Amino acid sequence: MSVEFAFAALSDVGRERTENQDAFGSTSVDGVDFYIVCDGMGGHAGGSTASRLGVSTIEEKLALAKGPVPARLVEALEEANSVIFNKAQRNRELRGMGTTVVVLAADPETGRCWIAHVGDSRIYRLRGSAIEQLTRDHTMVQRLIDDGILEPEAAENHPNANVISRSLGGREAVEVEARVNPIKLESGDVFVLCSDGLHGLVSEQEIARTVCELEPDQAARRLVDRANEEGGPDNITVEIVVVGDRPAPIEEYSIVRPPLGEGAKRRLREREEAEQRAREEALAVTAPLENPDSAAEVQDAVPTEVRAVVAAEPGSGDDESTVRYAPVAIGLLLAALAVALYALVNVARGDAPDESPPADVVESDQH
Ligand code: CA
Image (cartoon, rainbow, N blue to C red; front, side, top):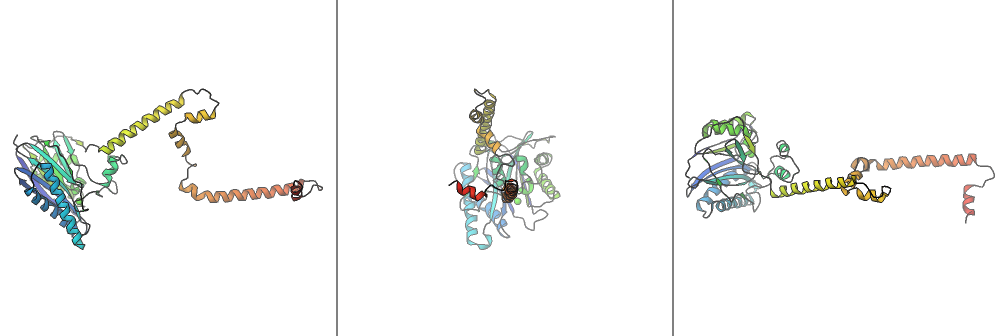
């Protein structure tokens, strides 16, 4: 299979920033095309330095690298990480700089492609009626989703939505996420690489429709304009790669998210198993007891989880308000006891016959 690629790229500062800290590039090595988008961060000078250094280092390294494409991608991204990290270490003004990166490597001869990435820039693939997010964001929020703590729908408006957990240059070593197995290209596939200045503002539906309706350069322009219409709070960068014939737009696309990570799958399995156990134990509780009068037997029949829930019911827990008001309650109780005791002593004195000895005498007689 030999396919033609149509390609366009565009980057824009947006409406609120004074500097564009995104960078992009493309290069061809030994017949394989490489498309790159970087989104820099870290201080006044750091962001743009990191993203430009990222693109240039990756292009240089790819030109020299040998071996299978995924290995070349990982090598190039690791090299970019070292170069950015070392420069930041040497220059006080650049301390803490870093950049995201997404790379698409496409081989028109064999009709295969590979991807690698770090951070929250994304690669989408439009195929038929589905737009699929091929990269999983390296963000704190995505981690919460993978851990089953946060629902994907809640992620978009999460306050830490754009706090990334990995970057090129942020640390001495970086874990690059790369696909070892190639993705087979089909005529009509459209790949979209972009920074979060686009995917945070323009929906996947609209991205899919736009790249089908317009030629790549016009589509890139339209998408950047749309992000700016939505406020353009961040730099916006988009690269569009159309494989063979551009597909016709359709009314509604399905959106495919990255599959759950292994950790998330395991947790999901564990949660399902725990729920199943709880259901079985709850059924066991309703089974007739041999001796219904035995409190111990009733207690044993209640599953541990249920007992824990009962123990944690409101009012019985050690939550903050209970702890805070406990001294007041004890004080009131002691005061009430003192009043009661006082009243009791008075009543005892008033009602007792005159000849009965004082309380302390009775006390001493018992010894
Ligand atoms: Ca950004």
